[in-house]
Image 1 (spheres, rainbow, N blue to C red):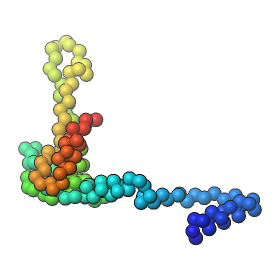
Image 2 (cartoon, rainbow, N blue to C red):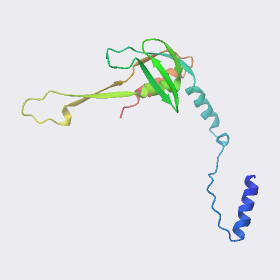
Image 3 (tube, rainbow, N blue to C red):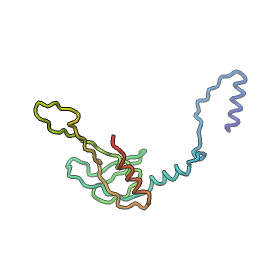
Image 4 (tube, helix red, strand yellow):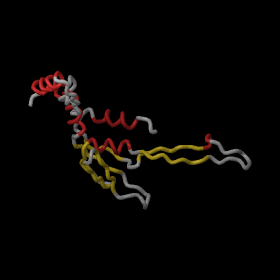
Length: 150
């Protein structure tokens, strides 16, 4: 039944005193969105394949690969060799940061305060992009890497 016919039927029922609640959500087609082309372009950009190398580590307990997932689509990225992955998975790697806190030494008898704590933040899986055909790629990655960690 079309929306017009559906609306007319609901109106007729209301006129007869029948209370009708419509719990169906209205669906707004994205193609009517004025920014539809931008949405499509962004999606295409995030699905482009780029080549990265996740650096090796000296931590014997670190996993030999990074596993990242975006909306259920997983990518397993081994360390120390070039791997082609989608840009959306690289974004996850670029946002995976870890902060480790250390404490400055204080003299005996001096109260320990929050001022003596120092945070050291770094990528969980440091990596380098070795091939990105899109000229927007380097600026995109730099913007993500420069965002503050929380």
